Amino acid sequence: MTDSAKKTDRPRRVRIAHLLEAKTHGEPLTMLTAYDAMIASIFDRAGVDMLLVGDSIGTTVFGESNTLGVELADLVRATASVAKGTQRALVVADLPFGTYETSPEQAFMSAAQLIRAGAHAVKLEGGVRIAEQITQLVLHGIPVVGHVGFTPQSENALSGPRVQGRGDEAADKVIEDAVAVQEAGASAVVLEMVPAELASKITSILEIPTIGIGAGPGTDGQVLVWSDMAALTDWQPSFVRVFGQIGAALHDAATDYVDAVKSGAFPTREHSF
Image (cartoon, rainbow, N blue to C red; front, side):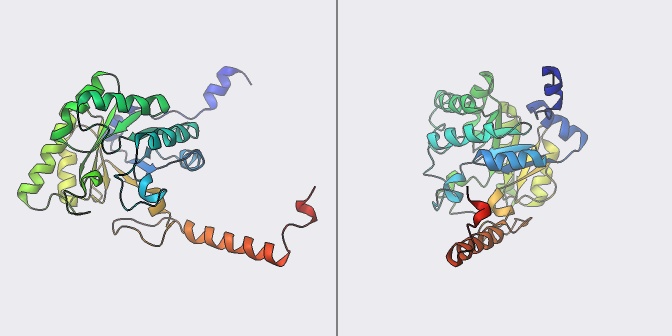
């Protein structure tokens, strides 16, 4: 097979420009979290548009109660792994808590490490207060996905995972943050745990795509933590739909393995050299 044929066989890479095209044409965007090459490859082949190397790795993989303990080195390593398992999807990597808030310069130095690791864009939480950071990143050629509404890195200030934007004043604050993210140059924005009517309103106001999580059906796309949508644990947030019982299937497989080894049914001659 020639080199040109090999290139033709590769799936078309989702690029930043394609996000705006999708919004323009009313094509819903899909995003799932991924933290390693194996899962990234599965989701990539399934046609997921964007893979988010989220700081949710802290709760899903590291067993922490929140995302605040995740370090930049954790996400650099995870981003490199996800990038190796991806041919089509746009890889977006989170900037963890404490790596961008101080200054635009700090944000750039942190984001640069994620881009070097293989990310195509970075995501950071906040609106008006981090607009300068977004502008700095974009000016230096780093695409940005914003994140407003409930921002997990601020959960202590927000008194836990609470819906944001209820009431006129609170809704105006979320709108202000979303508009600030767009004006700063972000290519898309995540709306987390905001009322569906408000999310739809923001989606109609913004020219950039909105990606909802717990924000109803009126956004331009959806994102879920993969272990939630696949029921890897016994609990999922109320806004999650379970698309597969992967946790139960793994439990059954591990139980069968233990039983087979204990009973002497595995390994047999066919599994030996």
